[in-house]
Image (cartoon, rainbow, N blue to C red; front, side):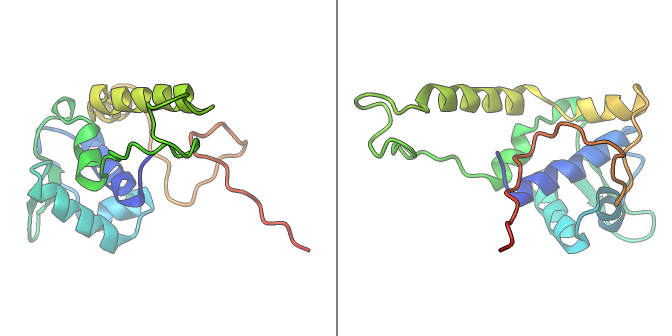
Length: 166
């Protein structure tokens, strides 16, 4: 669905949304990285890009750190996504070998179009308010780095193939 930079940007912005109080609370790149279990250098680089895109405000020095540049309900998931992902404008069908839209559609065409539409809708309609509300109003407590659930639960991530040893 998206790459590591986009995932890190969403993780950083979601953490800043969770503590949103009109921008008074600021978190350092190291705090965000540690709280989300992400590499500090990568989070710092991503925050710099988010700052240049006016999604976060950064202040250096003691008492500094990062805060959202706008209220969470004014920042859509599409904004960080579009910073780090490029739209695939190819007309080649990834499965049918021909040009998408010419001739008979491949066996996956309708499902892929449906999934693509759902992702676009999610990115456009979802704001970072969902993270602020989850923590500040609904009482969700972010899970600390390294904590694993006692029981398995469904995840949105694709399963990783297990290596079979000979």
